[in-house]
Image (tube, rainbow, N blue to C red; front, side):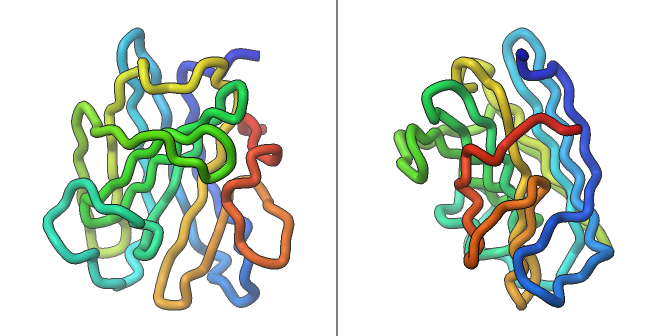
Length: 171
């Protein structure tokens, strides 16, 4: 089954840690055209400080508030798009679990951080999408307690967002 041209989710994450806020809402929209893919995420403002430095590329953004979008293709090739509330991003191509092959820059990105919610949109070239795009997951790490949540429930004693065999389409 081919990956849909448009996917829109609003969900309460399956949090790994007990005591995570059950009212948390995460949004994700993915729209593909012939030459580019737009990925928009939104999440709650937690009051955590931004990463040091100006908005833009920031390595290991997962150490801060973040929503991550994983796009899985054939042969364990996938993208990991790390997007933060203050306009920071880290866009990775991987082949095999956690094996970073390269990084890339978006065609463009916008962000806004309001009083209660934030939203980030990145546009990426379709050429960077892994061949045979077949599944995805959306994950988040939020707040001073570092709650780890996921659209797809993930097994295990410790949070592990790179469980590629658990990814799927919505529904």
